[in-house]
Amino acid sequence: MNLLDLFAISRRRTPDKAALRFRENQEETILSYDRLFSAADSLAAGLAAQGLGKGDRVAFFLGNRPEFVVAYLAVIRLGAVMVPINLAYRRREIAHMLQDAEPRLLITERSLLSLLDELEEGDRRSLERVILAEELEGLRVDPARLSPPVVGGSDAAMLLYTSGTTGRSKGAVITHDNILATVTGLLAAWAWEPADALLLTLPLFHTHGLVVGLHCALAAGATVLLRRRFDAGEVATGLIQGESTLFFGVPTMYVRLVEELKRRDDRAGLARLRLFCSGSAPLAPETFAAFRELTGHDILERYGMTETGMNLSNPYAGPRLPGTVGTPLPGVSTRIVDREDRDLVPGAEGDLLVAGSNVFAGYWRAPEKTAESFVHDDLGRRWFRTGDLAREDPATGYVTLLGRSRELILSGGFNVYPREVEEVLATFPGVREAAVAGRPHPEWGEVPVAFLVADPPLDEAALINFCKSQMAGFKVPRRFELLEALPRNALGKVQKHLLPG
Ligand code: MLC
Ligand code: AMP
Image (cartoon, rainbow, N blue to C red; front, side, top):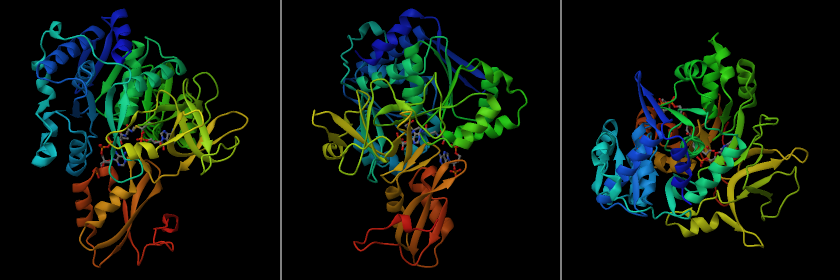
């Protein structure tokens, strides 16, 4: 079985129902299930005619819009692999992904072309063609020419880039089976039904918007109310007056929604919604409480990762406990272990391992990194090291995440790897040493802060501009502090816990 088999059920059952409704600038594009999948079939036929086939990578540097969905479905129909690129990325980050994934095609849109113009010839070596979203319709041909699908569950559907423990990001190979596991688990756990409509403002280039949002909705035969981006005012109005039954967001979105809803006296319409979910970063219990106070809804917090899809979730029917991520989803197994990978008793704090069909195949062209990321038990079962520290409540079985054993800063649901930022800082003239650490922030959760040993005078404005030219805005340190020396242990390793607060 592949993903399209799953979606085919919705297409067959309700061909005329809206699968996707995209609204931008007061204009709405509506694609029924039949139109969406027919468009994907004819685009797949067109791409196949151009030589695209199984295993070929197709990079997407594309915002949320219907063409993203049509093109994605066409790509997986051919057994090809989508490689989505974060829209905030700059040349250095995009170049790395293109060089590593070696896509044959890149699908983008006119407004983003200027960023791609910055790429050097070597960066785009693998690219045979750059296609604009605006041109996709013209590539469609009669789908009768399409050969039967050649795609199985163990074939890759997407390469999702994530950084893991080292500075350079790695592609997590996500198979059809991996996505099927997450989607079928969530359909049951959150009681998805065809009558659902999901207001989706999360970016489609990450697993939260893409798998948890888009895939679940299409598999359920529900409707996706897709938006280009999150705007707290528009979302509040949409939720109060619109047709959505579900909303998914990262904690930053809920922080902003709480502020927005405090100013509104027309909140009664929110009672129509069935479920609000949060994930990708810790939801502060204060935000949970404020949202409940304003809306009467308990946000359902769940926990996932790019490499694993979704792992744990608070219950749909049952108490949703703030500060916890609930219990394992159907088909997911968890262990909490000590540093020697020995199981700990419930209640003890340790490293969280997960296993299940949801766990990815491995890192793209990085067998050593893949091997390091898994522990094998006596039965030969593969357990993925999440890098998250966790404790299970012995009474309820609910899991609380306590932090991370790897260095990772979570800013507004985006990942920032200190080492990558440190490497960029170290190339700025005058910077002798750099250490980057996360510091709490009321809106973003955490933000990166840089500690520098530098030759005076350091031009901070020039340094910020340099950082902005080298990496996505959310990775740029919010504060720079000059130190005489970085705190190091006897082995010379920087002791980040000794850096100023
Ligand atoms: C934007 N900015 C951020 C930021 N997003 N700064 C810190 N952290 C972030 N997350 C900065 C930009 O650099 C810019 O700064 C300024 O904010 C305005 O940019 P914007 O693009 O207009 O921001 P906005 O649209 O308000 O974005 C906020 C947001 C967005 C919350 C909507 O960050 C977002 O969509 N986050 C969701 C990320 C996500 O989907 N994560 C899921 C990963 S999957 P300047 O200085 O340049 O002007 C995963 C697994 C799982 O984690 O469990 O789900
Ligand atoms: P990513 O690599 O972008 O997929 O981010 C995955 C990481 O996000 C996880 O390893 C966690 O550290 C974090 N994360 C996801 N959901 C939650 C949550 N509900 N609470 C705390 N952290 C979370």
